[in-house]
Image 1 (cartoon, rainbow, N blue to C red):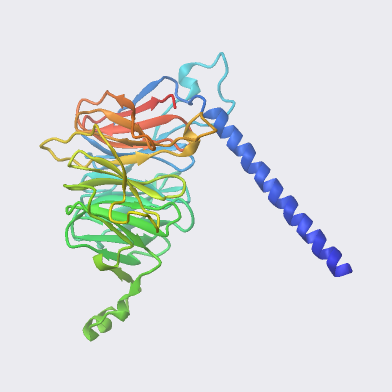
Image 2 (image 1 turned 90 degrees about the vertical axis):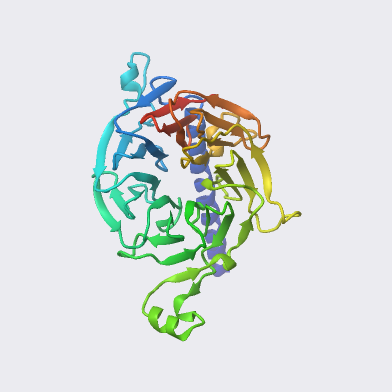
Length: 400
């Protein structure tokens, strides 16, 4: 009887702990919903200037407090974004409401910075460059903490990271490899994804269990990072002997989870998993298409996984790398339906925002005088950031 009472008491405690956790999450969600009715921006449109030359990428940190930008001037700039509640009053000036300041300039790359990704610990950011290196920086102190410089033989076009779990980084390079790095490992990759052609874009699912890649061949591939083969299991004896000492995992194009050939007719330049589950992938290519792929394990029509094709994106003779982004359900003020959105840059200088389900254009935002190269949604405020070839970064408040 005493044991039964102890078990009952233990289950009661567990239920109480679960209910408390649920309440905390609900309260946190309420705070976020309260904030997303408006944004912390001091004006509907804010322009960030400082880069010399094109700004190739812009990203928000997971907690939304830092903005990272990287450009052709070979540096990464970090900007503060104040999302604290209760900091604004009726007498607060616009500058005090959210003074977005350039808090750090990270120098070290020897060529253009092409891509950025905030790591899951929220304290570090990874940057990929045409100088064939990936550098990891401490956001708080503005210092380099890790460098991968001998892992790729050519320019690294894209880098992405997971949002949960151990900090993983996936890269895409012109040398035909996409590599996975564990930040806890010193200076080498832990996995290789071999392609037949240069890899232009990549994306890591939020849980770090899967990644997507695409490139010059226009094919979008997904890779289950758990189902890798060790190098020492290679079929040739000389390969096993040569690679037995290396703690690497190797995948080739025959070992992909999904291969989607029917989406694009040209180079795919941007990939992004949908939030929060990662069951779809948004892609944008040089053929002027922005597609949404269904990457769930089972689908009635497995031959065609294109759910939606969003119209509006334009390309030009420069053939620049243009990226896309997806929004979190927390972004919208419509709590009942929680709509999500897909956004992409365009060579015409406009930023396009589509409703993910209907495919209708929600916004067509002008402003950039050249190609819009990258876009990013704030994690929980209705704010969209865009960077362009004109060297400017725009932050715009959306009515979602």
